[in-house]
Amino acid sequence: LRYGVVSETSPIGHSDIAYARLEFSDCRQAVYLRYMNEVSVRFLQVEQPKTGSPLVLVEECNGVELSNAAFRNSRHRGIAIASHDCTDLYVGSIVLEDSTEFWAGLRVIIPASFTGVPVTTAYNRFDAARNGEIIRRLRG
Image 1 (cartoon, rainbow, N blue to C red):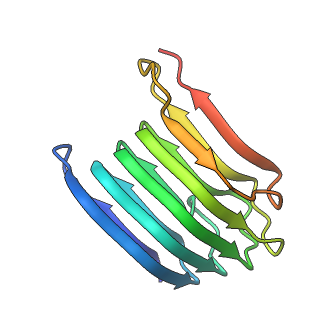
Image 2: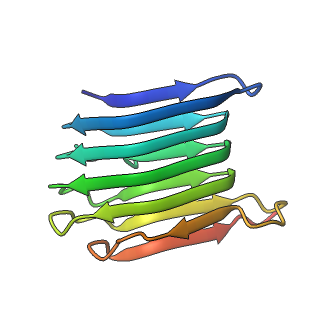
Image 3: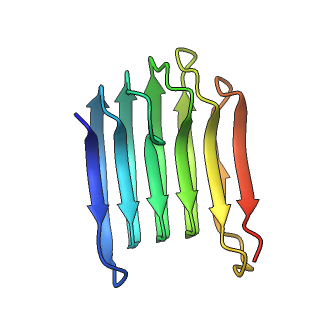
């Protein structure tokens, strides 16, 4: 399995979409979202992912909730969750279990022009990662 969920639209975007109770094993990327508004991904379980891309990648989205996710049995040394150019992102109750080897639990890249608070995080357990959360603002 290469991807679990791929939801990519034109820059016009889609909105008000919910994904729940997803379980993926042996995939390269569990979730890929691009140009989405008001989307939630809840109760995600990822086991034995292949190496490669971030397991959850969110690009150019607004109003995204990622919650109640667990990553298990992974030799993936990359990033569990990555966000690029998103606003109003909530990441909560994410667990990287001890059986994982991620470099980072969460990486957020913020557009240089954005002035608000683009991401809220709560109740995450990134202890198994070498770096917990990495939030960077692009220079512009």
